[in-house]
Length: 310
Image 1 (tube, rainbow, N blue to C red):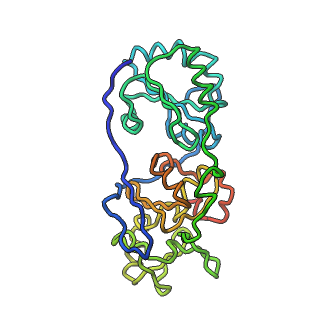
Image 2: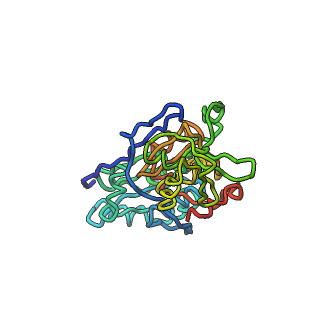
């Protein structure tokens, strides 16, 4: 087992208050960033080398993701490479029982920090929803590693039916996206995105000042706000126009979040369908924020703007 310096980093979140409550907490805001694109193709029987691609495959196939952290200078890592990782009894399960990705600690210091890896080799097993189910530090034998894969294979994410919030929805929560009488989608429930972003206040826009972006209408208080919006639309709109990123990845459905349940991550505002989903996001924000894809969304036709994600 070889020591390695672990970098520390975390995102801060903003729990958006109700419009009637005024200003949300600005001290919890994160910093700038955007989502990752691309649809990977997994090869059965092989370790993957890209964390982003492996994560997307794990989500698509709903399989556990095994992150194997290693380095060229780590003798224990090299021993596992020949005696364990490349054995047919291990590779034969990759892409079917689990998705495996080998991560070079020297090339991916961000992942070392994100998963708090302090020594090599370390292996982190993630459920399909991105939550950690197991962690192993140090080398191991082929027999023990096979048992490790057995345990990973039997790991699953909690289903939506097990969610208290899903079983008992709060009817007082209001959707971020509203379908108006003329069939158009209205972002932020008619509140001004410029006021939300710049002043951290929920202020109603006016039908006299409407702007459309990606097929979604946004209301503004003044013509000046509308002009400011169109100078840099993505600065002001919620990510996915308010659709819940957790629901998209877990259930492959696009559902509007509610205006009482929001969070900032890397400068972008996200909304969620229920408190459970917001908590899942906060526990592993990069998993949900940076792995968004419109592929295989069962109701994508109801939200045409999803085609613009990539």
